[in-house]
Amino acid sequence: MSSKHVSRDVLPADEPLLTLPEVADRLGIVVTKVMDLLNDHKVIAVQRDGVRYIPEAFFSRKKDNTNRFIPGVIALLADGGYTDEEILTFLFTPDDTLPGRPIDALHGHLAREVMRRAQAMAL
Image (cartoon, rainbow, N blue to C red; front, top):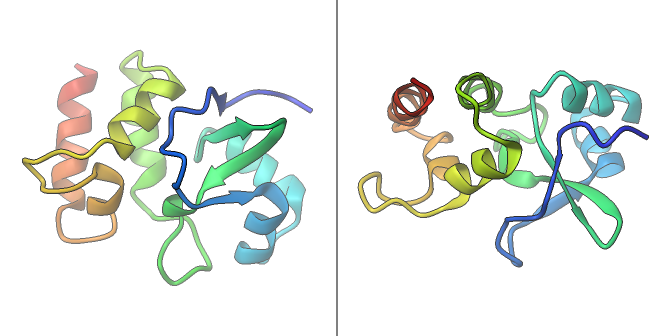
């Protein structure tokens, strides 16, 4: 299988992760569609102990879809030259000015602020 958009694991050890089959079950799709999400760079996977995982925080709290802002932030930063590891580091590192982690802010009223910051970083 392709290693496209499988990042070196830069996430905290306690970050909740889902295997590709778990993502498929959660979204009600087949695993090949999860691979499409990875190949289309809508999400990024990390590899731990030879297994690919996608951060649970990439998905909406309704549990049936990806968070609508995640693909946009990934695209903005990737287009700006950021690697997958750098994108994950940005999303999962606490930022006192938000406050909290950008990935968590994408689930609330600060989502547009995170998008604005990603756009400014990509310039």
